[in-house]
Amino acid sequence: MLRSQVVRRAVTSLVSSALLVVAPITARGDTPPAHRADDVDEAIDQKLAVWRFDALGIDPELVARLETLFRMELDRLDKQPMPSRRDIDRAITGDARECTGEDRCLAAIGKKLGVDVIIAGTVGQLGDNYVLTVKAVDVATARALQRIQSDPLRGQPDELIEGVRVAAYRLLAPGQLHGAIQVQTDLIGASVALDGQAIGTTPLPRNGVIGKLPLGKHQLSVTAPGYPEPYQDTVEVHFQKVSPVVVRLIPSTQVIGSGRIEQVERRPFYSRTWFLVAAGVAAVGLGAAVRYGLGHVKACHFDARGNASGC
Image: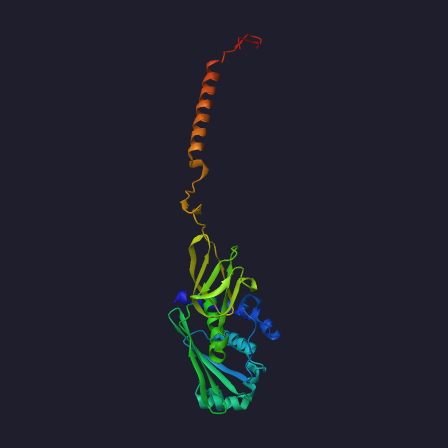
């Protein structure tokens, strides 16, 4: 119980910080630089409104902050300004405020707000995981257009925030759910393949960025002449982020000669025969010099006045 309270406090604190960063960016209509992976896609040309997120057994303050973050993400998608929480509270009164997410009552609220699509959601907790459920209702027909449920989100603040942002796009703009990979290497002419498909040779355009990739895991492969072992790795693509991958290949130990291939043994210089022989000779010479010097040392005698003789 104590651990859950600590996790909730940490999540609430980080979500608050995220809102402070996202708010001025959203007001300008820009994509946050830290998350920019590609050019911004086409916005939605429908008027949207978010009714509310209900808390299912968790801290309502945390849910309210997540709802605010969700609204900000939709603001970036919608061409038209969305009604604020204050606008909704002023327009919706009486029994309508008791709507808990049924399609008909949501459509009625949407008509009063003058929007095309109205959205509602819930946030529940299962152990240290959170589950976000969101649906969009067409106001004209009073029918659900889309309903999504997130995968269990662990109590890590970064994952929870990204899950809320992804939910906004999955609900209304699934085609814009993508990220990017950046291949960083000093190799020239290396062949790059992603998920078995050839991408090109290094240096890749756009500073090595491969953009508009579906979220999730991708298989990256880089091969180059003279490098027998290809670079292969599984890269995780995150929403609107660039995942950097540093590629290094080990050069071949084979040298192509006149019609044949020789195996070259690459050993450090201090393990080679000439170095060991030279070091042995030097050690013998140093030992002889030391013995000679010690054998010719003469004792000094000092008289009462401190004068030395016999040295």
